[in-house]
Image 1 (tube, protein in one colour):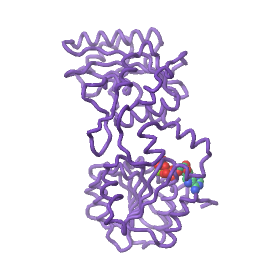
Image 2 (cartoon, rainbow, N blue to C red; image 1 turned 90 degrees about the horizontal axis):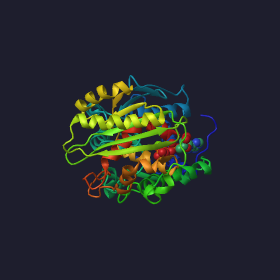
Image 3 (cartoon, protein in one colour; image 1 turned 135 degrees about the horizontal axis):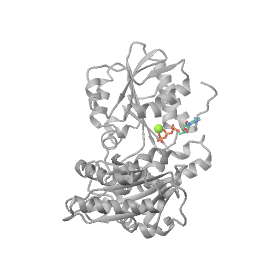
Length: 414
Ligand SMILES: Nc1ncnc2c1ncn2[C@@H]1O[C@H](COP(=O)(O)OP(=O)(O)OP(=O)(O)O)[C@@H](O)[C@H]1O
Ligand SMILES: [Mg+2]
């Protein structure tokens, strides 16, 4: 390690490690960018280095890819290739001469893989994203004396299993260390960077990811939009690198929905250009295709290109028919990615809050109304969910999201 400095909060944690005061479970929780992962990796490496060489150690993330990005590469950066090597394909690494195994907690087969083994220690990245069964299994594998687990997480709903069964469990207090990190604790980041980060989160996401509170999501989802819809009107339109169309097929009671959106070359700005709802009742596939064709033709005429149409992947027959219809226009029809809805919502509200989302108001009536009407389902326990009971226009939101979800990683990175 080169010259490194800890924040005051990180020092608190390292002091406990040095005084041998870590417990069986050690949880670092709180806001984003608070310095949890950074110090937890150092603590993990320092601790593993003091432990027997013949024990087995494990590091887990939601998936192997996120583990690599969030932890394995940063850990290698911190302590050097000499001290930590890894291979994601063999799911094994060496940390100060100790064998480390890697697992993705979301892989259905992972739980059965760890079932038989005995672990000397475990590290978990973003623990709230793990299935509870996996975590329970992992804990039961920590069987050697002095075995420990170090985990980091952001907060989630207050009914999350980690909160109710572990953090709030008084019986566990001898077994569990719980350290809270606030974003302002990370004194290594420029103040301006932190100010900008705070602006990107709104509503429940602000409470959770900035304040670090375990709170439920309730009320309006796109409050940042409905508080001042006119602030999102596009004055003039920039050049777009991508123009995509999202299409959600309606069914029982719902309508078909179309949305065209554009992304600027720097991948920073998202513009909703035009939305349309089409009643689904009694509409033949041919009539629907005609409406989609007309919509696409209009976009082509005005914007000169369509990169792709992303259509609801649940309807393969309709998609096949649509491909034939749109081929003469040179338009490809692809399956919607169907990212997790909450990831799409987070991306949208981030772009809104960061002043990076605009819409052509005169053409996007249904989208404006869909944003205004969308609310969280307050009857769901365990995870927040967008209410989808026909009282708001989820179809248009789906179509809007299909149109840009493929680009969410780039849009968010910026
Ligand atoms: N002591 C330090 N010295 C230098 N850089 C640091 C230090 N602590 C944290 N950082 C940097 O601050 C940024 C945020 O830290 P980190 O990733 O640990 O936050 P986190 O709490 O895990 O956030 P999230 O909840 O978003 O995962 C990272 O870029 C990290 O490298
Ligand atoms: Mg982290």
